[in-house]
Amino acid sequence: MQRCRPLAESGTRDSVMSTGSGGEDGLKEDFWKEKHSSFSFRPSSSLQSNTMAPKAAASSGAKAAGKVKKAQQAAKGLKCANSFKKARVRTNVHFFRPHTLRKSRQPKVARRSSDVATCTFPKLSKTDKYTIVRQPLTTESAMKKIEETNTLVFLVDPRSNKRQIKQAVKELYDVNAQRVNTLIRPDGLKKAYVRLTSDFDALDVANKIGII
Image 1 (cartoon, rainbow, N blue to C red):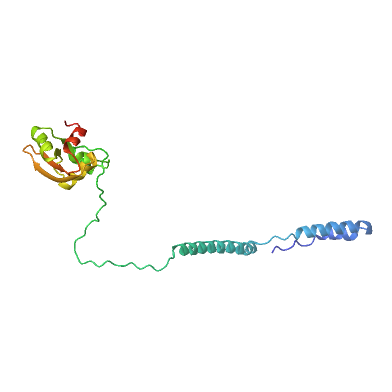
Image 2 (image 1 turned 45 degrees about the horizontal axis):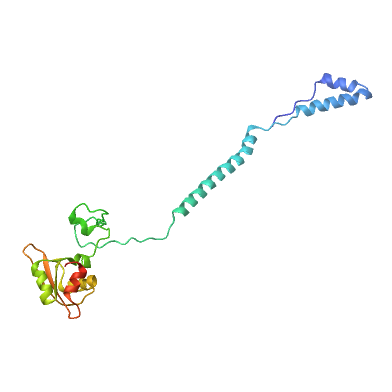
């Protein structure tokens, strides 16, 4: 703390004492004003540091608390349930890559004649009546069979059997077959002899078909 200034000099004091009652009050006021101005309090640096220290400590404590809070939040986010990883039991020393999915081709258009079976576009059935019975035969031997044995002769699909031929003839010409005989010609085509029941006349059926 600063010390107050000493009292005014002896000359000033004597002048104050020698003045009359009227000017004495004014001189006293001036004296006390000067005295109070000389006693202006200025805190020392040690006091300033003491007052600033709590503020700095409070700010540093708030920062530390903020850091701790952030660390706790991060730890809370990283926390999870105890997870156990199951180890695979290996009985072989070789490692293989997994098999990838391989889909079969489904072309919309056949590139080759051999690819017709793999195409997805609709195709005719192999057992269709129009593919089984190809055409009737009108040779002399076929006409003789029609007249003598009530039998119609057709060229049929080589892959068809007798049941399929019988059913196809029934669907195409609305006749019932009693018996079907087949043979493979030297050119590789199959010929079918379809003998009709007694209810139907082969000659009438041939006229309806347009053979005769």
